[in-house]
Length: 165
Image 1: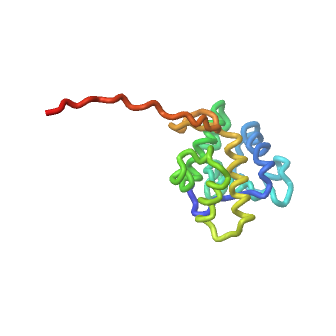
Image 2: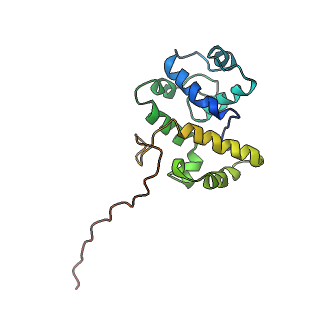
Image 3: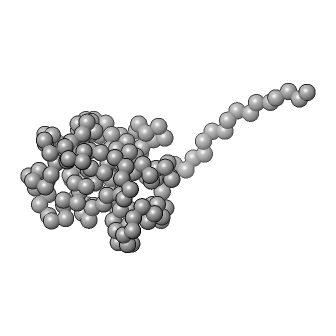
């Protein structure tokens, strides 16, 4: 679900525990405030995490868990989350295919172009993205791997000599 303005939460430190709860508990019929509170997330700002789940496609527009939610509960949860992040942040990955390895400044630049909000909101967008990426795995093909850059050059293509006429 790629929206124009990236979702963010003011409680980025609570994303990791929430994602862990998703893997450990049953699938709710709806992931709304009442469900969130039943999982122990009772802070007033915790509800902003529900928008993030929707943004990356773990829930649909009606807050119903999607097939990605079910997949996230499996052994490949980090790779599933990586794919969900790439889907939700499609416009960011269109600019930077390796967005999960980019600097905060690069991320801020892209997020600034997708919102009319101020610097504080843009910072929260970056922090939210970073908190998600910390729980995910990525590779060039989107299947698995770590979220850290190796900065290695790709192997050079073989040189083929063409005969001169």
